[in-house]
Length: 404
Image 1: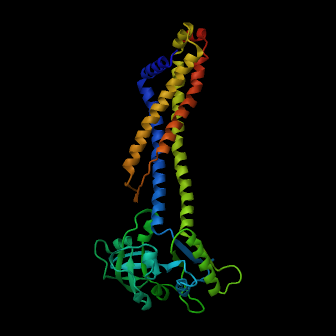
Image 2: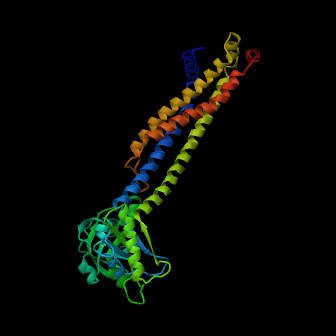
Image 3: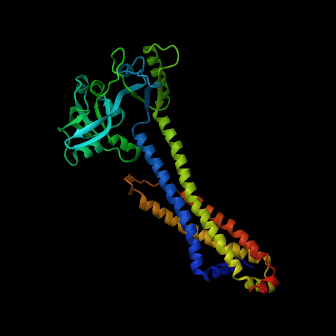
């Protein structure tokens, strides 16, 4: 029997039970569409998070105390900007944060108050939407001024312009001098829900942590290297040497140094697991669709048993019957896979930029994923269609003719 006749016979058999074939096809469509759309959401989220972090700068280093001890000071941060001992360091931005109660009029919220210096704006890539950023004079005078994150500004002041208004932080009165531009949703939204104050003000007004020497302690020193790549390694060595000498360390360092690249690598590893998890969940739909194909093929073998017997009696070979039922399963899986690819890509396009549960979705459909889903759906159809096809091919002509 020629392939064309086999194909025509398979189409005729599927057309005889349109509703049943359509419902089986729907199972594959849903499975493939789920795989493509969920993988697109997962990949898009991964790319969005990575790009947001990279926007903060890939040439960043973070110096933090080892353990809970307050071992880093503001003087340590300023010492790192030394063209002789640390020529690879471009700028530093120490920070000291604590949670505090914020109140403006009748509105209040509890969030993170971060003590910073003027360099924090350029090192961490912050932009001011209105007003001004913290200046060196504010740090020197321990001024009670505050720059609000966009979300905090909306929470406390609504649609009013906060600049020039007064508010209370931990019971103390502060003047709002600026509002930051929004960093966007997701993990970057945390920056929109914080406020910035001069680091000296944070130390003397908002925290109670003190050192024996009376120095201003910091929790993190953000270090911007002059360039990425090999300069980062040089900067790490220079920072390590300088702080080791300043702290008179002879044993293990009392500080740790991590890079933005390490943060991105760790995050990509985590999000890759998340994307694979989404794909695994969606693949269950494909498996269910394959079981649906097996179900309809078993029914298709049972119903035309006498027809199979007649065809065998007039000379049809076992492989002809086998190929017919395999062709039916292939048509269902390939057809469902093709429609599923189109639906999945369309769904990914529709969801891109949409807001779901307060989060903006970003999708990144992949041609490789679409092709893989189509291949897998075809393979599943063949896998679940082979057994019913073999069962039909093994039917004995006489037994088939006697079937009622």
